[in-house]
Length: 143
Image (cartoon, rainbow, N blue to C red):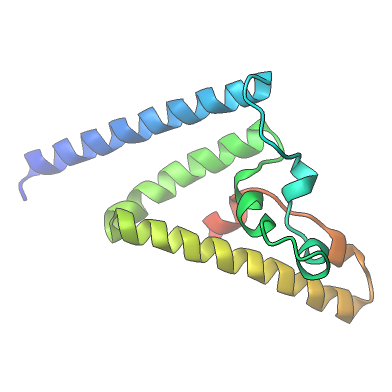
């Protein structure tokens, strides 16, 4: 592949990333203004050892990844994901990258629950059982 094709590919990929980021920012603004409402509150979907093991609320494995504490938390994750995601998607391909994200998301949440249980039993402190986490940050460190 010559340099012209690489330049075109990079240009198209960058444009798609910018469009996606703009749509995400607009969607976040609509959420912030209350025009779009999600059917849950942050504390209803944050992942905790207690919510998963005691209450068997497994939907938190999925929804806790997409909920964020505040706007800056979301923006930081979006910028970080844009930088890392572009190179990883190019390296692995879109389908494999999506599968990688799914596996890392599930494994990170399972690890969080297991560590909460281990810390609770080892330190005899229920804080670790009840602590809640939301966002995509943990998944990004494994990619």
